[in-house]
Amino acid sequence: MSESNAAPVSKRPLDTPFRQQRLPAWQPILTPQMVAVLFLTLAIPFIGLGSVVLQESDAVVEYVKQYDGSGVSSELESCKIDNAGLCNITFDIKDDMEAPVYLYYQLTNFYQNHRRYAKSYLADQLLGTVYQSGSTALAYFDPLSKKGSLILNPS
Image (cartoon, rainbow, N blue to C red):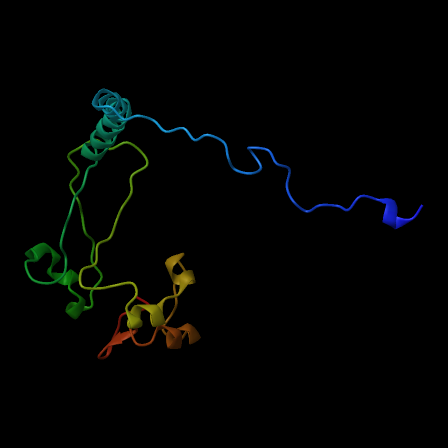
């Protein structure tokens, strides 16, 4: 058989409404009643979700104690960074808390994208590794390892 007898293969898609994108589109008619029903249908689940989120937010127990800077009570005076002392901070918890209980630490005027923080970041330290004064890792903590003659990091 010769190739000349075969019909030429066309690269054109079939002439159907789907392939030629001629299907009729759904065009809803938005009447005020239809819009009100739509809004109510969407509002009811979100009101329920919002009330659950609000209830959980109100159940959060928060205690705050400032231990450095101005306005510190006399019992926490030894916690100031200038005194370089170790200190214990005691919270008197009056509310019942269910497990798990999370502790958050707040820093003010200190940003994680700050150059000094970025240079002194070490993931192993955040995981609990304690470095001694003679450790070679101290060079990695520059410039936040000392404040004058006081070694801040590691403690």
